[in-house]
View 1: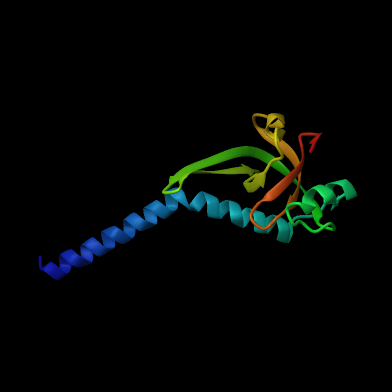
View 2 (view 1 turned 135 degrees about the vertical axis):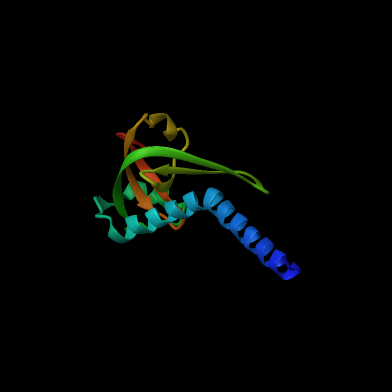
Length: 133
């Protein structure tokens, strides 16, 4: 084989390695972001934020008239390493979520029910399995 052939094979191998790294490390997180945008685009809102919830969500720059959606599904914690340290992504029914302090204790094995408000990068959990914030 000529040296040009070896360079082409090396380039293809490096490309394939990059695709494999992306698939293992970044695909789950990008899939969760697609689920979040699908929830805000296609989900049916249950209600609007209450005044007390709106005051609490004001800290996170969530508009006071934001819709509240229902999520039903399993809780999954995705963890991966990066150069800046371990990264974690909490998902509920495939949607990235953030919990209030101590709210994770209300999680159940299997399916969970939550009321959430959609933010830019994740959904904020307002009520989890009947436990309010």
